[in-house]
Image (cartoon, rainbow, N blue to C red):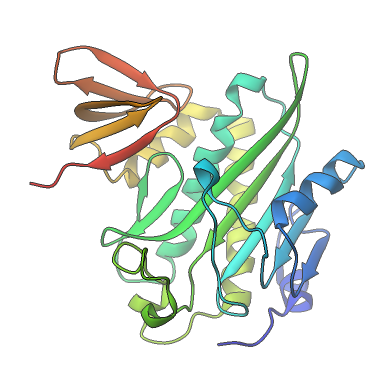
Length: 265
């Protein structure tokens, strides 16, 4: 459970054309996203993968830190160079959420859920998150760094007190340690498949699969955005991935960024 990832085994078994052709592996690094960005800015090719067993400056969405004991989980970043307009870059996050949910689903008997826009939940507890960072020039999207963190084999007692009641590891439902090497292989393959679907079939196809995992559809939620809290019902996502909120006032609002929290009861 605490052995290093077997990168050579991943590369031998991968059935991909673009993603994972080059894998940069570190026992410790400041941030896989930061290293992947450096690679992309230096001309790194699409599909390069960065994996680290430990991050000293791991980050999550909204500037939150990502804490992960070494040799137990998965911290991975991928360089993508999608042919998308800058305003469509959020589609990459939603596409990767589908690939991640589908990967988790192959390891556990329960159906995972997606919490808009980037968290994967099982039984209401977060097991994985996504942090996508874009680089644009004028009206052109140069690249996207897709960062993924998955709690695979961290027992509850090793999780910080502040997140123990709302986070879990995939191992909680497998009854045995997850094969991290195999999980990584499946994830990279699923990412390539979903990325290809986004390119060839368009975002509506991805959105349909995303909706099938959506944890909050039809449920009452609060949305915290720009210092304002709004109550309403989560209706789904629109064609560019924004959350559609049917407010209690009757207004329908597109949420591009914010913290969405379900209302119990």
